[in-house]
Length: 106
Image 1 (tube, rainbow, N blue to C red):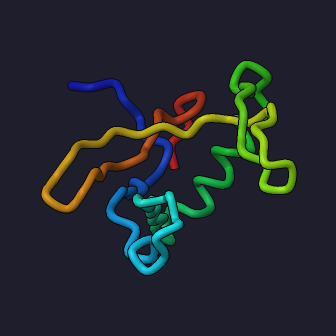
Image 2 (image 1 turned 180 degrees about the horizontal axis):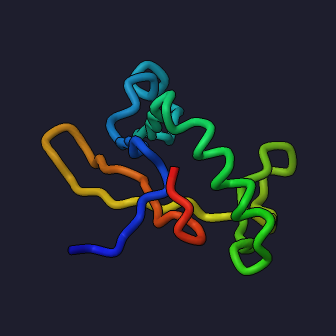
């Protein structure tokens, strides 16, 4: 038996597939698109999880994100929300349901 306690009552779903809008614009270099589905039952739990991670200095990390105004990557602080996935016939897909913080499940 696993001692894993999920943070959300319903896991989040993600997928990566072809960007159909990129086909209509040959200059669009973004040939893939990411989708994230959050069940209504998990929205409040996700917010509480994010708030708790932000309040924990050990969870805040630094990385670079793209700044469209300066056309350059810039360092910012934030948190990582990770999940598991696999490749399938229509692209990559998976779920996100991290371990509950302090064993406080949904």
